[in-house]
Length: 257
Image 1: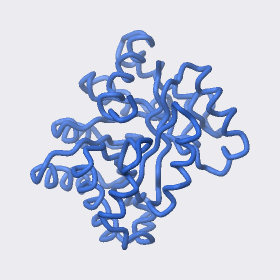
Image 2 (image 1 turned 120 degrees about the horizontal axis):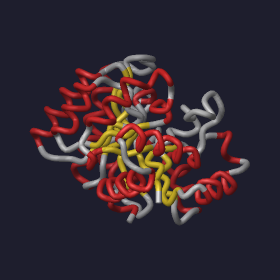
Image 3 (image 1 turned 135 degrees about the vertical axis):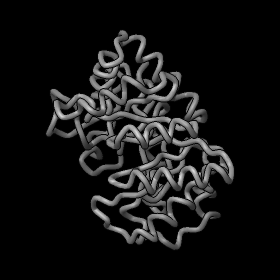
């Protein structure tokens, strides 16, 4: 089994052929998929997709792009939305300094709110981190000192220092199709060096399709190619990397078992 730890099945392009997208993933050997929430107040949309398929689960959270839009979301509201058997994670939340579509103060406040929700529920936090390595690491270290929580740096594109600091706190690092790109050599170096029990694979569908589909719409079945490149990078078989990342997935997303 291989898992897709992060995809967006609520993306409009998937709506007309959602059954076919999931069927192709199953045929490729993908055993679990997590479709990701980006707005707490639209959680019902991703939850409905998760309820439709036995092997699809979801998260609940506010993406940093939407942090200003949902600045009034409360902890109680987030906890209520997370209290559903198909919700296996909090987020995605975090910091994005590349686009800066929301005020940084709102991003920081939302990030810390989601950390508290992860701490309260015991569900892992799915973290979006883009061009904000130092602040993400500092917040994770500050908040971890106040109480442990599980987390994953999804679609990892940062440098080795953020990976090191995250793993030191017990976090996981998830690699997307970028790992397969010619420009992905620095990421492959990080992926080769990380502890085996801290790595995951994902699509981030419909974005970042791996080679040979780069530039096309991504979908969960393509995660197998990212896993293949991860196996090659670490010098192991695809069967070994599938077993490894699947075990890591179930340890982190325990509600998806």
